Image 1 (cartoon, rainbow, N blue to C red):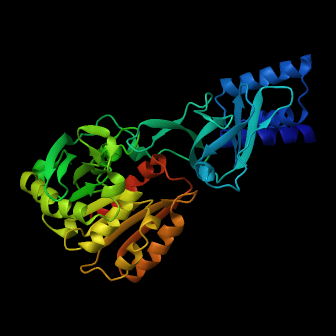
Image 2: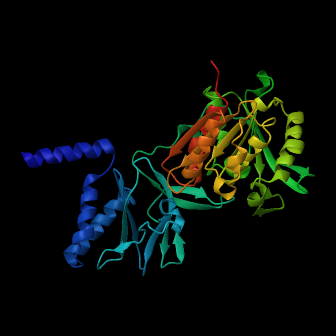
Length: 402
């Protein structure tokens, strides 16, 4: 009777959590008791087939995860957000080999709602995607390569990022060129105008650095987020200007590390050239209280720099995982109260992201009497993190007023 009761409890827990407890138990047994005899080999093959058939590699349960790799290797390591892609040396990322087999594993524990990018490193030199994991997150400057994606049990995709049938789409003008006198070269930008703009007169505007990546469907997918939020009446209709940091004639040359490093010439380009052009060609309100700047990482640093250098131009700021550590003078710049009062929304990941610097800035901004919103998630420095929080930033900056 007691055994039956235990079985019922386990089955019920498994069904409620959506996870296979029996596979977890069997995995623990395989990793501790496997013997390379005929019985053991058959057992191992059946177990591996079960993991593949149910799509449970990595095997996730509660706050624990088993990473697996099968193949001939001298060493196998897992590299990702969880160990700063190798920079966090105290994280044990080295795989262990099941004796007498070609299966390697690593057991870790993460928050139940975490989502993390990773790759497998074979023999210290060959980086590969997890061949058994269907989930991927595109990343990298320019958005040119995918990582494998670990999704812990409580993590959920944000519905705002998913394109829906029946939601009207805004119009896009892509890859427009402007010759900048301030910068001495051409800059590419794209403009999103919401579906409802014709009936609403002039609209607020958000300028977005790293515009190509915020636009990319596998990275920021921001136009889908805008369409959904406007249709659901969660934000006001807003014009979005996506500024591409890549050189127009050589897209492999990304100028972001120079342009987004508190660059006064880049600020002049926005204030003196881009904004006047946009407001002469689109129904944009010419008011700092209706104009936002947004960016991630170095772009988050730049958004902060733009707003606190020229609060007469930008009255709203969206800051995602800001790279404040590259220019610590940003804290002093932000220590003076903004006049008029500035509206700020900042986000950060908690796993080898920028939460420490973001919390420091949070204290500075609270003392500056800004209208301030701050969020942290159990993710790393990744577009998977930033994409899911774009809707929160937009709702903070452009709410529907009752």
